[in-house]
Length: 213
Image 1 (tube, one colour):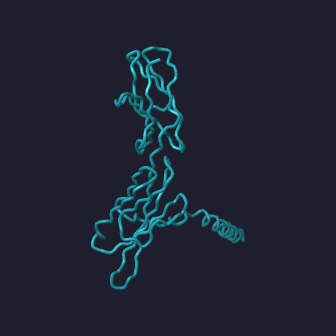
Image 2 (tube, helix red, strand yellow; image 1 turned 135 degrees about the vertical axis):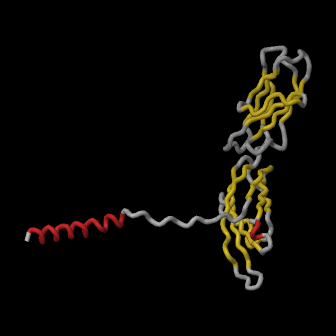
Image 3 (cartoon, one colour; image 1 turned 180 degrees about the vertical axis):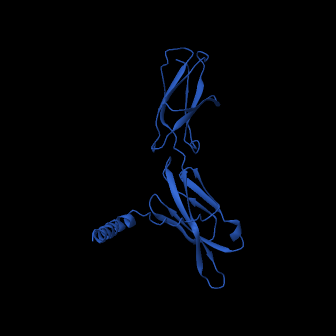
């Protein structure tokens, strides 16, 4: 009798634990979406980003169509397109834009489309030029101090390149002031300040002319 009761208790315990074991079992992994293209590049410019991509070699003799989405605002830039480039314009300076590209191979006889995959990339537009560039007193007859204001749209890091009479004197400084030293007293110098980010320099520069003071 004791053996029968023990067997019944063990069976009940097994039935009680079974759902817990099932609940703790690992969920099946989601299927990974393959890339749409072999190369997907975004090159930032002045208020624009040029996108280009390359189809996988195995599809080079087949008809491929693409759709392109700008993630920032959900705008579809291209649909059922056969081209492998796109120029996205009228963008905000010094801003990161993210894009998703999807591709399908098209059966030329039936017109049926087979999904290839999805790729994503990002690009950074270049910044605008600095504003408010002016000279302030350096307290020295052989030094010239320039100050300026951060350009508009400065959400992403901006640094500055400074030129004196056309020669690069300082590269990638983070501050909005700089003092040129060891200058000739009473001589006029041309100062040019260019803003830059990870993509490149602004197309325009702020320029002033002044003497050491």
